[in-house]
Length: 138
Image (cartoon, rainbow, N blue to C red; front, top):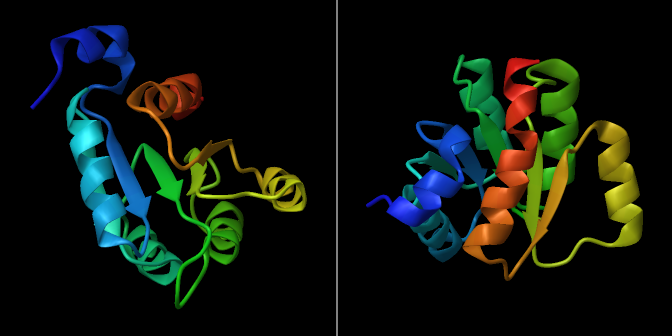
């Protein structure tokens, strides 16, 4: 259910779609509930390979929230592949418990737009998405 206060604070996020890539089902559930506060639809997959499959099949979310540590294909590998082969214009926000300075440097070099470190608040995530919303029309 939308939160009127948050929806009015972030009108540019209403009706957007986020692809959430995270192997932790509880994280997926929490993120979906957070996104509902401003009217964002969340589509969840368990790893980077699943995200790439959806994107190669034509799915185009407005944002990608990517965990770093996942089985099958991790966030670094899949982000690099997505940026280089499919959807360089879709903002990718790394959503992880810890991102080292070296990882941040490598990810920025790949074109990663933002880093969201767990635990985060609703305002943190909406601020990061909102900051990158203008890229959607570039």
